Amino acid sequence: MSATNFPTGVPSVEDLVAGGALFVANHSGGKDSQAMLIRLLDVIPRAQLLVVHASLGEAEWEGALELAQGQSEAAGIPFLVAHAVKTLFEMVERRFKVRPGPNSSCWPSASNRQCTSDLKRDPIQREVRRYAKAHGYTSIVTCLGIRAQESPGRAKRTPLSVNKRGSIAGRSWFEWLPIHDLCTAEVFLTIERAGQTPHWAYAAGNQRLSCVFCIMGCASDLANGAKHRPELFAKYVEIEQRTGYTMHQSRRSLTELVAKGNAVLTSGGAA
Image (cartoon, helix red, strand yellow):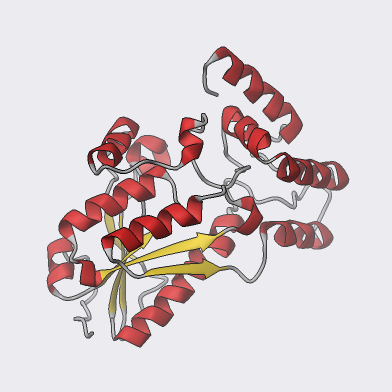
């Protein structure tokens, strides 16, 4: 399939659809990705949709890949799985060996989210480039389930923008945030109205679904992860203790945060 290569600038979504652009839904298996795909199906022809899931291996919640794949297949949309050339733990171990000084953490951080770039973004873009080339697309729209409510930084994001990193001569690449305006309640309502069920971790108490132990996860989500994946929790704790660096952006140990989260879950709150 051929598609129009748009000039520099940001056309409307309608123009991108009319020009035959490929719309790629980055699907984590979480509620925002699920609601985003539901919304995309209302406005984008299925023939122009592709769903890609970045597999995080053992760091990922069980069932996340299957939910993304199941939703895609039910809608009749092509589904790809992107694999990184290294795992999170391989990345951390290497960074520990080559760190420039004792104050340089071997874990990703909020300011240096190498886990996102190396394990998600780059592998997904690699698979999308291959797919686009094989199917003759010269205009690509990456769709992300980022919402303004999540943080001040995300609230400032432009809903539709040029992906300068991906745009080259002969290929235009854009980034679209289809559910940027939705609040959390609206996300779950969108899923419910579509007759679908979100990932089971939400019913188990999670606020978000990223890695089981996210560097920016709340204490209750981390405690929930330790409850359902004790062997993975032990692996993180061992690396923290051996390297002397904590994985969480708060710089509190995972053991401490899980204890806090368990107290919160017992009281019926969230933190």
